[in-house]
Length: 137
Image (cartoon, rainbow, N blue to C red; front, side, top):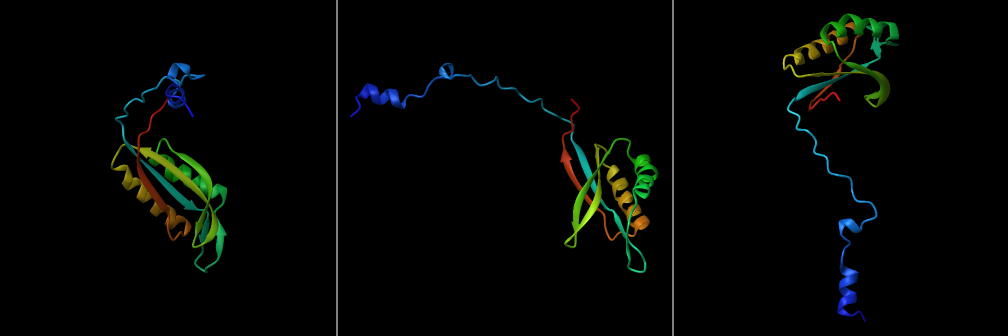
């Protein structure tokens, strides 16, 4: 059996000064007041021709679309390659991400999607938008 003193000793937690390595000081994150909207547009890289055949959109065609259609609308954006799935089938896609604090830029985003659909015979372009708190460090 434990004595009262022994019981207290086993139940006592060590103080922070007794820990082998004290935790790092707590850093307070700055309050970010700038909110923005991030738009991500997912563009399929195959087109459906009028005869029903499927052909790939070439890298040259994609680059021309970016230069002629995306660059004039957005001065700062990123492009990445991903694998998407459409109707259960894997499909290479390009994703354009654009962050803006201007409310009316949403109109440009939707217009860009419509242009791509018309140029490359797409059924749809996925647009995802969400609120973000961008910060350059």
